[in-house]
Picture 1 (cartoon, helix red, strand yellow):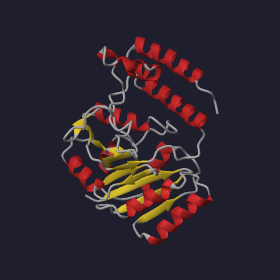
Picture 2 (tube, one colour; picture 1 turned 60 degrees about the vertical axis):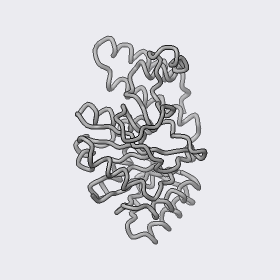
Picture 3 (cartoon, rainbow, N blue to C red; picture 1 turned 90 degrees about the vertical axis):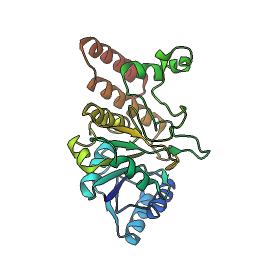
Picture 4 (cartoon, rainbow, N blue to C red; picture 1 turned 90 degrees about the horizontal axis):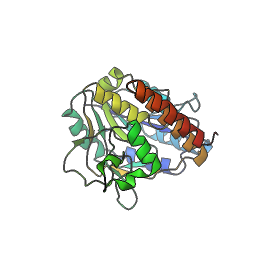
Length: 279
C-alpha cells in the first residue's frame, strides 16, 4: 500500500525541521503533504526548502489558519496513496515506524485506525497515545483530578492510559492520538474525515469514536515509533486551554445519548466553558 503523510503546521518553531528530517529518512513513505496553516516566515522557509529538495513533498497554503481538523482534511484531499498517516509537526518519526504500522493496519477490521507509540525525551509513553472511550463521566473524572482515586475505586479510572503496562502486540483501545495516526484512505473518506467543527483538540477522539461505532478497530500499536516534542507552537496557553474546552464541550454534546445525559452534558459543558478564559 502507498502511504501519504499529512503534516499540518502552525508556527511550530524549530521542531518542524527535525520532523521533516525524520520524514525524509522514513521507510515506506511515498508522499508528503505539508499543510501551511499560516506559518511565520521562518517556518515557511523551512517548508519551501524541504519541498524544493524532496520530490515527494507538496506544500499547500493560502488558506490561513483554518484549524487542525480542516487542514488535515485539506491535506488528505491534496495527496494520493491508499493509506494516510497524520503526523504532528513536533513528532520525530523512527525510520521504520510507518511500515510497522501498515502491517497492523492491514490486519485490522475496517474502518480501522492505528495509533503509534510516541515517547518523550526520557522514553516515557506519550500521555494521549492510549485512551478509553471518552464519556461525560470520564471527562469529569479527568478534569477534576478524581482519577487519582483509581487505585481505590475503578469507577475513577482515568481516560488516559499511558501509564498502563505496554502490550506486546496491537490492542483495541477507545481512542488514540492524532499526533501519529494511520488510516486507510477509503475508511477516512467513508467516515467523512475529521469533523471540522473542532478547531483544534479532540478531533482525533471524535474520529476514533465514529470508527468504533461503525464496527471498526481502533488500535494502539506498541513501538516506540518516534519522539513527541510537544508544545512547540507559539499559541498562548490561554488560547490552547480555550480551544480544548470548546472542543470537549462540542464532543460531549455530539455524543450525548438519552435525555438525561443530554441535560447533564449541557450543564457540564456550560460549567467547563465558564471556567475557561476567553481569548
